[in-house]
Image 1 (cartoon, one colour):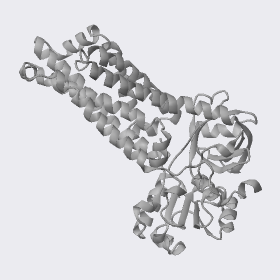
Image 2 (cartoon, rainbow, N blue to C red):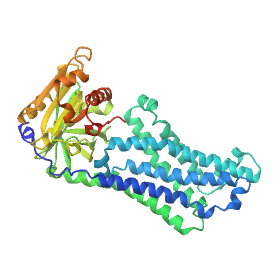
Image 3 (tube, helix red, strand yellow):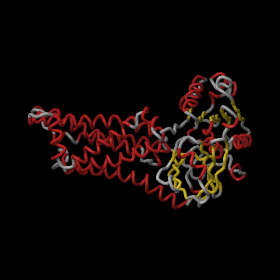
Image 4 (cartoon, rainbow, N blue to C red):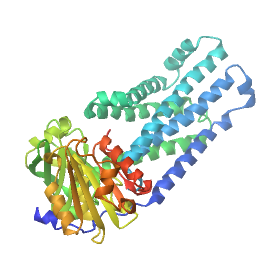
Length: 453
């Protein structure tokens, strides 16, 4: 423990400063690619075909297909965990954008299916459902495309908030793996039967390039890089320590952990290679930056996976992916910060205290219904005191120990001049952010990440 606390105030050797340029470049290229993808419909769309029976519907269907397919690939890139983009934006914001684009993808591909079926039905003067059946059973690649669309619908429906609340994280995660299969199944249909590609080598080359770039990026950053990082550092479980009722710390040891590019406040995806756990990875923040050959996470029992961590045995191998997240001191605009946490939200705050430059003025607030809920309290107290900062503990029910704007103003009178980093349950973060805004903290100086799936 002393070795961990001695890291207070040091700057992470390998936690690079995020560069917004990469996020802006990603956005510009994504918009440019959408324009090109839709424009490729123009060379195969003639005025005479549009005015013919069903022609306008078929043209609409083609445009919807190009836009929907391209946006589907963009949604995969958003969660491909590209390091430069992750550090600049934050995984939580990328996931939110991924969810917002998802309904548009389903709607556009749905419009494509309906419009093309209606258009061809008008041409041959038959029913739309009958024509759709003919298309699926006779057009090359259509059976695979129909199966892919069904898998996309399944992933989309389980992404709605109500459905997510009813599902375990492990189930939701497994269902969403089928998204990759859905994308793969639709690829052949696009090249074999899509009019913009038949006899148009430039269009075929563009789409093959876009698909290859997406597949290569996903494979690289979701599989190849994590495998290389895991083999390089060779982490194993060293000890499991109970911090509070329902809260445990997992201490791991490995090689060259001083070269792991993690900053205080970031998280990694951890895969514990033991029976019943090896097939899934979960995101947990580091609760102390690497010290020597050790690194630590602190986790609260909130589900099957987190509950099983207390049963890990020394020597269990660990695979890692990351680090990720923009919840780091690099986001601050000032040299005065307020670190606020509730419950296990204290873990990234604890690691951030390892990483903050020594000259930064620190005030910290820990919130809990009882003293047992003040996770890593002693360590945070010692680290804040070593900096000459102040730690406030707010303990008790909300009715008896509120943390609203008046209470926050009493604890931190100069809050409007500080950067505010807040972490904890969703309700706590929302109310705390509202209070900070009420007290005049600019929104740009309020930093948080939401790890809910």
